[in-house]
Image (cartoon, rainbow, N blue to C red; front, side):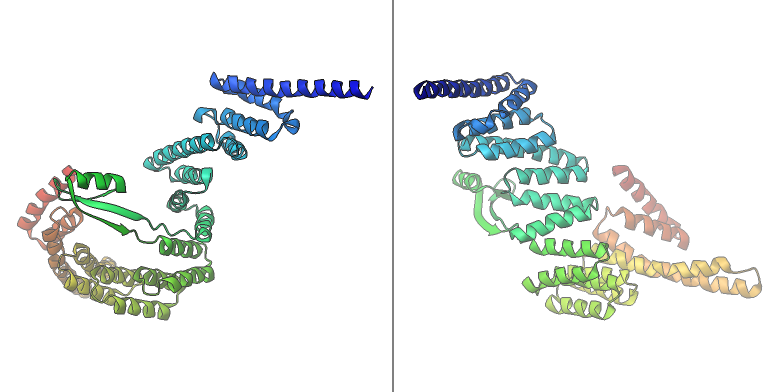
Length: 416
């Protein structure tokens, strides 16, 4: 009796094994025919037999389920997410196949992300870049892209989570770049090492070299701090900036970022202290002087701003924006004059005051002219400078100069 029972059970197990193979084969056949709806249905049936499958069969089931859900790239985002989980469970037996499929999925997400980015659909671009990272959680640069594009659309909570994840992963974004000079164009080209070496060997490129890119960590910590500022969480903002400064105490950009935070918080004393430190570290940096001018101007310190712009020009006589910003500071003094002029009555006293204000306004225009003229001399296609200067010449009654600039403005506008 026991012998018959053993035989009966063996037959039963054999039939069960046959059923497993049959269901898995049905999934496989549907996938080969690109009938992914049928493949998903067959996988659902096969799922009922999963508990009795051996490890090899389970791996095959998950591998096939992943393909059915992925549907050759046509699956929904939810299905693809589940497909990736299934592929992970199949890696022990289908390592090379799963690696290839994950790379394909990554590339498809990147393609969608880049397409969304080109359309300035930064929200979706960010999500696709994040998905590209989640496929293998290896290429952290995609997570960085996801965070940066989320900031573009002010999805700060999401960006903050991604940036914090990058920090915890120790992401720096530092990469080794290989470059060489193209003999034909004389320009430097960044290439992968194999291509660079091949071109140098072929003598189409010369002066090969390599270098490390700058770390993205200061930018990440700075953005985290600025997100906290935008949310009104100034304490966390300062804490984040301190973390960045501890690693890079002499990084002028970080010093300026912290100075901005203190300015927004109303800590003017700390703000000025940091600006002083920045100039001490890089006294010959024209761009720094210019940026300090912008910050001083935004904080309603026009005298200090003008001094910084003048210092930038002293260090770099061709710094166009410094000339333009000085002219803007000069012309900003016009507004209270116009307000007072418009508020005057028609009495003799008011008429005299009007003439005084008019002359003062004319002098402001004359003061601004040399800066705008110099900016236009350096950058002959600067439409903003040309337009402003043309309007000033019209007000000053210098019609010949105004006519000459009118033709230039029209040409520049037509070229845009």
